Amino acid sequence: MLALAALVVLVGVAAMLVIAGNTLDQRLDDSVSEVQKDLDVSLGKLRTDVRKELDSRLPPGGISPVPSAEPTPTEVPPEDDSQTPTPTPSAGTPTPDPAAAGTATPPSGEIRP
Image (cartoon, rainbow, N blue to C red; front, side, top):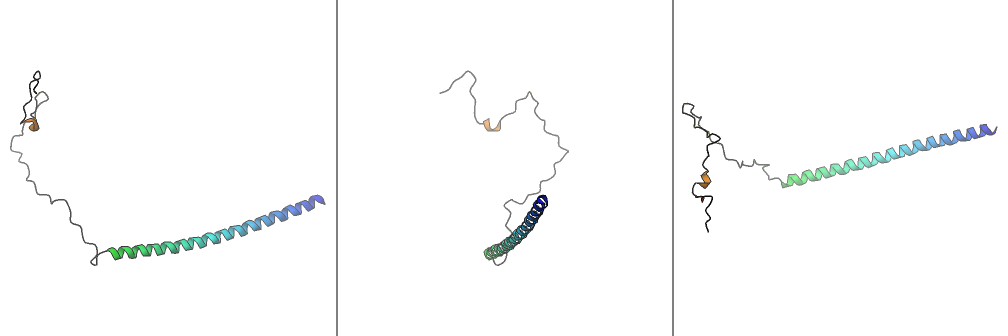
């Protein structure tokens, strides 16, 4: 008899816990849905306000195209292949430096003030 009474009590407590869990779950779902609706409404208002603000800052004629800062490329005439190509300097030939053309470098042993 005692075991049967303990079993009935345990089944009753388990049933109450299941019912309480389902009720809590339903209330949480309702609260989440309400908060989500409020958030959607707030974001919709924010979107509308931002759109109105941006529209009020636009000039009356709309957005005008911004002129390009790059110059228009000019057409380069094609190279004439009939001319002889300029020889390229070999590895042993020194190439003159155009920046140093006007300056004289002193010999390696000479020191100038």
